[in-house]
Length: 210
Image (tube, rainbow, N blue to C red; front, side):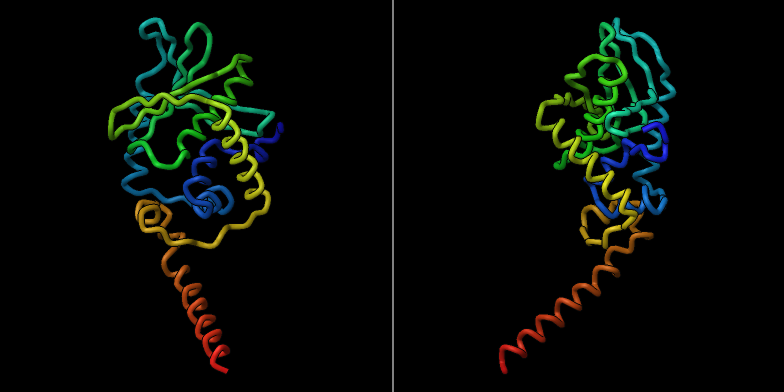
């Protein structure tokens, strides 16, 4: 895929696993808004970039590294790539804490798949650094994670090609932290569906009384 318009942004993989509608709003409808969480994340990444490239303890460190995979149709950047004996190890910086879902791991694994294609070397592991815990969490790119990552890539590609934005689904934990809540309107747009379901139940009950 030589046309950049056909390439999937690495960030879309995480958005897709977090919320299908958020992914579509950002990558199909080109909607974006910031909040305190996004501002905190932006500040963290700026600090990472400002540290600059260099060599630390014998390890070459490159920051904001452009990534691309022709095989998978991916494009994006890695926050940090450490080169150990010429072999790359991606490190992704996240604002918050480790999550119950695997969105961060999938995004990191996709970076590794790009690096494998670019360097011609296997990339068996990487790391996630979380700003809230200030802890670096190693991630092994095993068969299961690689399979999940490629499945998500295909799911995102299918969504983007469809050009369709899924209907909202209210989730207190996710929607409360999402910067796109104002554009998405998950609660108001979810209520009509609940009213319709209630009407269907009432009609079914009346039919049963006949």
